[in-house]
Image (cartoon, rainbow, N blue to C red; front, top):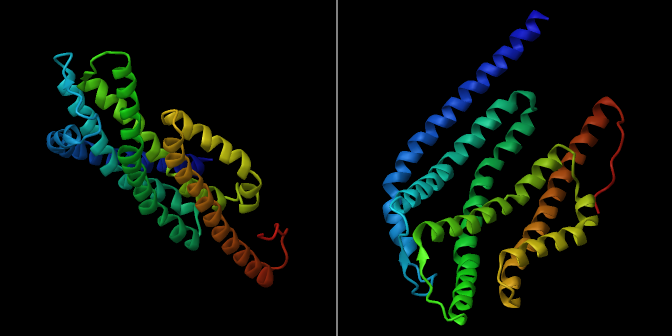
Amino acid sequence: MKDQEMTVVEHLTELRKRIIWVLAVFIVALIVGFFLAGPLVDYLKQEPIADGVPIVSLHPSDALRVYMQVAFLVGAVITLPVALYHVWRFVSPGMEVQEKRGTLYFIPAACFLFIVGILFGYYVVFPMVMQFMTSITASMGADPNYGIAQYFGFMFNMVIPFGILFQLPIIVMFLTRLRILNPMRLAKARRYAYFALAVVGITLTPPEIVSDILVIIPLLLLYELSIWLSRVVYRKQLKEQEAWEQEYGSLETNEPVQ
């Protein structure tokens, strides 16, 4: 009982150390983000996304709020690989050698897809939404002026979800390794997944067919990529299971990959 309590205490101590490491890196990255916030804000304001609509400050704290948001986003992007690495180090002692190597590759892939999702949301989705909103405002005879805090807040609320949505292949691969998902289940759920992704794409874009297509197609391709990656992982699991059965005897078999 005492050994078990010491083991729990050791795990909690290790978890605390890794959380402190991540927080320390985030604080440093946040400071870096403050230095980069000025040039990034200038770049984002110069982009012709708002179609020449002036961006004004409606509150004395708006500029500071935008700097904080940009710095936080930069800090989160820089800290993401460090946080994922420490999560991997914390759970890796319970994995086999092959599982450690396989899951380690998830870290750069997850960071890459997160950045790609943010870029897709900013350069593809956000301009379409802003142009649509501006056109509606102009059609009502109103003079569009955007508060800088509201403009950047709307931008982040539009862009960051795509960074999360682009994590779908990584999540599917991880759940496949845990044997929670497999390619057969994903293929059977394809029509429901397509419908859900189409609803997400239509919800996040203006009610215009071209915009919907430009967003929905990449989401559907992400799902198909997830099925393909799940198939790769699943086949590897079957080969490992077959090798185990040949050496140690038969186990309960799984469905063959279609």
